[in-house]
Length: 193
Image 1 (cartoon, rainbow, N blue to C red):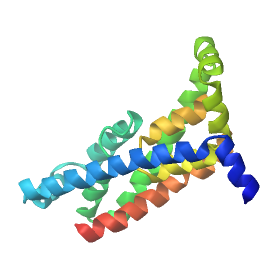
Image 2: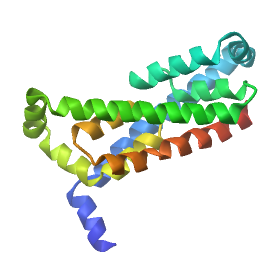
Image 3: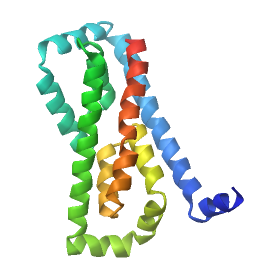
């Protein structure tokens, strides 16, 4: 444990984690505040979600989710999880959201691998951010786990994993935590709604 602690201090892993924890806390704070404000100022928010669940087709919702996940999570996945709570088979829809998110991650990972093959991108990464790449390769699993579980743009984590040429099989295993995230968040959301 002492050696591992020293290694993490030398590689500045603790600083990275502290910075990430602060950013994640801020994002969670914004989401909770938005939810509370929505409930306070629009008391019929639940009616609005019920209307969305009945009026919009699941294909449209899943297409919107796919697009949002690909473009850095423009709409937080929690809103889609709330939508699933109003459907006839919420757990199945949560599973579909997790599956779509997982495949968007694979797609952006692949995109990152392709971008790395562009000479200008490769040269930039190897000269300007080589220290960060080294650290990300060291902590890759933790980085992907954090991206999969916390409310940060998962496609950015996936793209970065592809850019640093992180081993795909390891990426795919760590990315399975995306399912865990969706189901844990669904448990919370279903109890609130």
